[in-house]
Image (cartoon, rainbow, N blue to C red; front, side, top):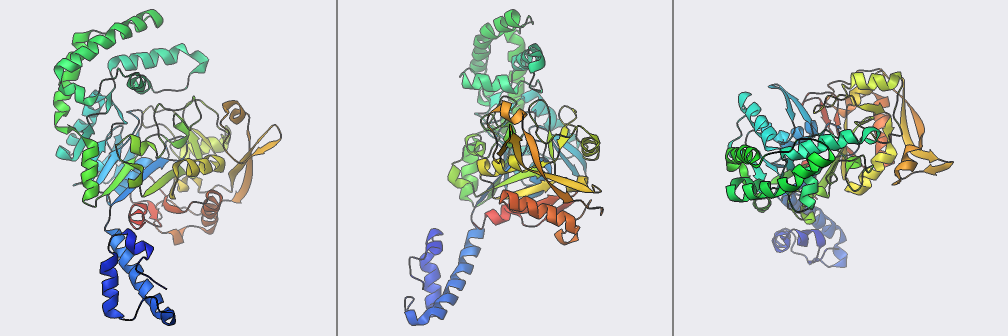
Length: 491
């Protein structure tokens, strides 16, 4: 039985129009108990009105890494960007490396969202990103050389913090001084830049456009920074004039792109446009929820999309978690399913597991459901994208970690204590592999039965559906079971 307070219609603001149309088709009263079947068909009709209407409203999908980064987010974001209007990078710095392979060549992005490869898309760097302006200009120049027009399609938040040369010096000196306690930082100054941000002495992109403010901040910061570098790390300091000259020039070059990004996003939402939020690194490198202290210096989880771009949480309509069909990690820190045998070497070789930013070899291991379930919960994942399924081709047997055993106790959830995690032994399920080549497959039906069973078990253990499956490095080597961006517009 339907009434004029029917929820879904009321939520989309077209209640009276929908019922008015039904009135013309079925003049009978809605709340007549004797009209149950008629009411059923009225409900069916109204649900169709609801779906069509909601498809026209805005979508805001967050794409996050579900492991320790390097999951292949660049390719997934690049693929989804064709259905988006705005693509926003919301955290991290140039330590991220997103590789996209297209018919125009291979592109490696460190700051600019990969959606810039599509004409007509607006790409933004949010306030949560730590920006190396010199490196950013190099990326822009490379795009120009490769015939990718940028123009006004690329915008930078005036509130985003700037990586200064002294941040890089501190980063490298501090990491070297740690010796065996090194965490594997890239030395690009991202951590020290975030330290200055929290200490309220950071320099923001908007400051580069105001010479007086820029010079004053540089002068004030160098008093403490130079003393710190010289006395603690026995390293040379910096001069005010050199930094001021370089960064003022960066500001002038980037001036056309520096603007109020939250306002641009608000206007995009008002126009009913689809916005794609792109995170760097992965869930288990999040500064709060990762394997601290072996983490990055920003909020790489889905919550960072709001604080790092200036949108409210009620605007987010979906969260897609990207995960490899196995697990990798760069740098130090515990890794329960790590394989140091020939299988691990095979995964590294076949998966080309070398960082696009540093070139460092990635540690490889079996798929870890404890990590993945934690990522589903912390991020509020609505679906998953599985990458590098083809790397597992030819493996006679696969293993899935379903829990950890520590001092005789079984852990089904992620331990926060790093010492416990480092001492955990994985508890595995064994699954049959497949010999069929899956590289380049574009249909779920074409997958071998063993691969389907493997993926179905991932869905079962995580309680999260799989929307996309990557079967190769090229953009088109992807099985799209459902488009998570379009589906999120129907919620």
